[in-house]
Image (cartoon, rainbow, N blue to C red; front, top):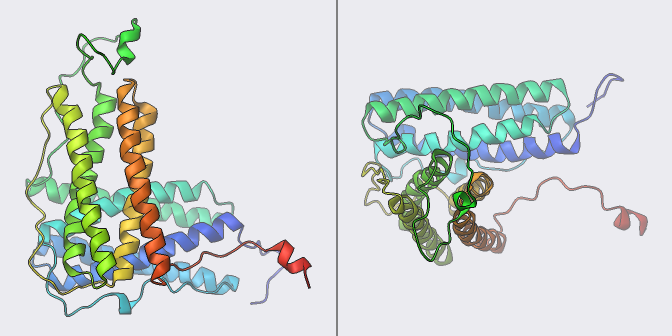
Length: 337
């Protein structure tokens, strides 16, 4: 490609974020490929079809940027990572639950990546990506609410006055006598977010374990399912300790299919993405929790998630599924001619 004097090359952070988003979006296109063939709900199909078309357009746009800049287009995820003849692995409702979860992740990623960009065209791309993911978060949330399968976070009596903490006991969580204060709404919101995310994650891992090909990968997905159950139980106990009911749903069923619609590589990457999201959510919850026992409990979950994610990364390298991001120049190597 011939560059003009006005051309501004991609900054390292711009190249990095485009690479990450290309991986995520190509994976999601492949997952929705399967959903479009197996889903039978007309409303869900409309959401999935429109999303798929627009997501594929964004994939093509990013690929065009790579080509114009003379950057090698990543392999990422292709038609080889999906089996369009596989039976339905999850029910129609779960397809939308899954897409809603992915839009939560996408919304945060696009906002972060926009703040790591400098070129106007890249900033504009992420602004459009953010608006797109926000739009489909709203669409999927509305669909699930109207179907009556998405429990809202716990109800609360709205405050009629402002209060300030005037006692150090406000932060006390580890108490050998007396009662701890009940959770505030900020703390409940992050705890509930963790429960909601892990309910979807548990069902996703159940399906992945059911259809994966490699024995060590099957074992890993079973471990992921048990970890999600452990976090749901741990966070649920925190809510129950404050007499707060744990909203739950039985919707989002895994079928009895044992034929995989996805490659093990795709399922492992998807699991890695969710683990990263879980770590970020735990970090936010820790930052905004004022009762001193909560950061400790969230840190325990974060440690479990980190170890799980780390082992998953090693497993992907073992199987040759880890595509390397673009590297910075190795000046030491270049100097040793």
